[in-house]
Structures are given as C-alpha cells and as structure tokens.
Image 1 (tube, each protein chain N blue to C red):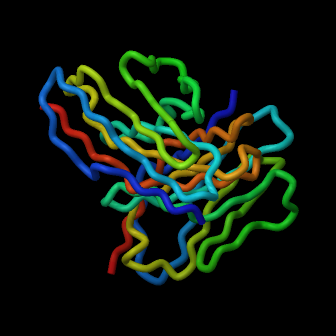
Image 2 (cartoon, chains in turn cyan, orange):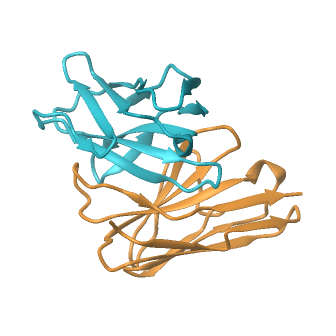
Image 3 (tube, rainbow over the protein chains, first blue to last red):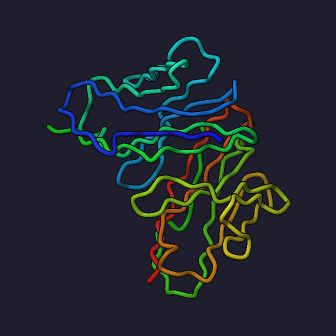
Length: 114
Length: 116
C-alpha cells in the first residue's frame, strides 16, 4: 500500500530565506502522481504543485519547486525567498490509483519569522 | 483550476443531531470526494461520491453514519448523522477532472464542525 512520510512536524525559517520541506513515499506502482498542498489557519487546502512519476524534470510553480528523486522515493518541496504569508501547514500527497484517490502525509507546520 | 464551494463554512451542533454539508463544483470536475480532518491531524478520505449511485466508502466509514448523495455531476452532499463530540472536524469536499494518475484534486474551503 502507498504511504507518505513527512518527518518534520514543524519548522521555523527567517523571512526571505529558502526552505525545504521533506517528503518520502512508498509505492510499488510505476505510475503515480505527487502533490503538495498548503493549508493556512483558515482551513482551506490550496494546491501548490504536481509531479508525475514519469516527468524527467522537476516541477516548478513560481516560488515553489519540487525536488523529485525517484530512486530515493523523495519529493521535497522547496520554497524560495519565503514570505510571512507562507506560514501554514504543508501536506505532501500521492495519487492512489484508481480512481485518483489521494493519500496525505502527516504535514509540516511552517512558521516564517520576520 | 476547478472552483469548489461548500456550505456551511462552520457550524456548532448538539450531540445526537445530524448536519448536511453541501458541495458545489464547476463543470470541469468529474470526480468528487469527501475528506475528514480531525483536529491536529491530516486528511482522511471518507468516500468517493458517485453520480446517481451509492458512494464508495473507505475502510472505517459507513453509509449509516456518513450518507452521501450526488444527484448530478456538479453537486454532492455529506451528512454527518447522530453526531458525537468525536465528529468535531473539518470536512472537505474535493474534485478532480479525469480520474487518472495526473488528476489534480482541488478542494473546497471546508466545513468546520464542532459538536457539543
């Protein structure tokens, strides 16, 4: 069965610094998708970035990039030039086929210091 | 991205009562799901809402406690029945467009439920 592991329950980062949130996964499937979501204190889940298992290049979306290392089964999220508004819970997730159910890791609470 | 709305956004309910949460998605969405997020926890899938038929429930969730309807492609409801304080959670509706591996799920704003 698929499993997502986030080993950092909480992180503190100085504003404008880059931050890496760790995520490892376990699956026996060859085809899968990896996602990162942000959840601010309001509770909504905001989609950030997606990486397909067959994508050779790391996904990027603005200040977000996904450091995908398939052999190590890791999918770390990198946020460049962090901002105060980045303070939130971050969840790594994986598609569980079919029909595209998503399983979530335990989350990392990121706090940005001014 | 898909646009998903939910209501109510929050509610406080008494033990033993039931609450129905509504989810409306835009026309891009074909797959709909309901998740529960207990305080301080991650998201857990309750069920896949199937259009015009019974929902597909995950292990640990049953239809009598969480009846789900999806009368058409863009609308679904989740009822939390005979509530207890342990049902206090955020309930989130999500939607995807293709049902495949590459399908990105977008979430509604969630319903924050407190049961007294």
